[in-house]
Image 1 (cartoon, rainbow, N blue to C red):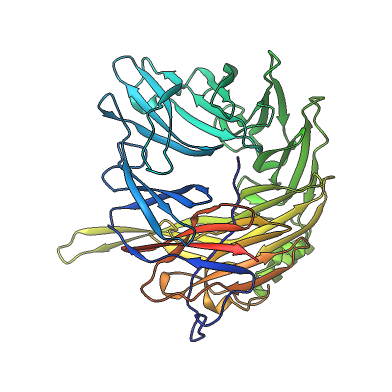
Image 2 (image 1 turned 30 degrees about the horizontal axis):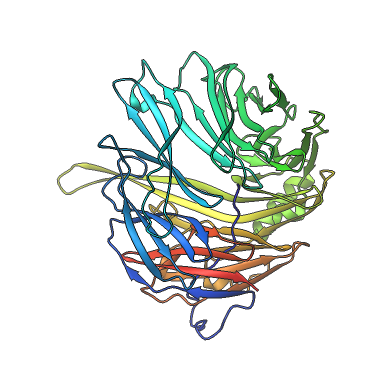
Length: 531
């Protein structure tokens, strides 16, 4: 099941005291701030129930998924830690690797893998967690395997999984070891809510492993499997002669049919820069961004559907963004430059935007959510006192505007809006950057660390960058069904307290989100509930 998120915050804004005011649009429950080892790292908030939420940590004695030691924690509804246990992932006295965790039906399931070097086999196991003791039950079950004969463990294939929208079907996907000159091979198995195998299939595609790259896979409520991949013509290069050098393929496998259905997705001379798929009743919805110029910019959106009953694909609808949307949140100088370029008839596009979410509308339309993200490096060379030349490289991470594009069922853009944001940090991997998002009712909720000077920002004028934890203001933006935005601060950020990490969060019901906060050796959880 694809999860979306509703989010929370913390911050400081100049000399204005937010600690005395409560947010208007959400209620907050803040847990106690705890001191933890600097070696420990939070991995996920992976499950919830009526008693609270469950979190997974690495104790720092290994790398995530590779011989790590893990700690499972339970927090009650007041976000207080009630219990924690280190879990044992050993198999035949050797460590298994953690592939993922699933909140599936009444079970919390750990998926782990184990490599047998002698037999050149890689196995996937499923094991449930006892919610009361936080210990793995004695019900380990092998649910998949890969033969990597002739290869090393570093090219032993991999596993993935997905849960259907109704949460009653589980897809386990596996790809065989990479072979440079061989055809692409993969397989999958679908399970029901009781972990009974419904069906399984192994596939060899008539495409080179080197040229076909899988980008997404989903299982629908009927247990059918749909895979999305990019197929390059001759080499992995986005363009050739100024034209796209690739096309997308949608491969649908139906449990009651021997042959799969293959759909070619191409926009002729336009570049598909991002594409996502989702299931809406009996349709596979496909939507994304396109460009006329290159793979790194976007000119507009496209949309189409595949009827799973007739197996027919609808016409692809393309719609370019208007000039007002493109220039939104830019300075007057930047806007004037783009408007001048447009007046001369030159192509105008937006650069470095990634598509993150495809949200289904009740009427068959979709909402696309993306973010501008890029990294630039600065390398400098100096000569030390002893005459030795020293080269230093700094990495600057840019997480800027969020874009929201609301598309009608006919493919027309109902409206498009940008949420102004400037996050610019260096040599930190963007640790506190990006945003968290959730859908609650007919509203979208966005939360991110911002510069406090932007609290009254209305879409015009200067946007001040969030560049460090010293000027962090946790900001909430609520967007309604017409694209109207409202901003507010959630709570004041004390100088030495934990700070929001937007990517480590989980919407646990239709109104509430839990978000992780950390700084140095401090951590806490915050629960945010839409009013």
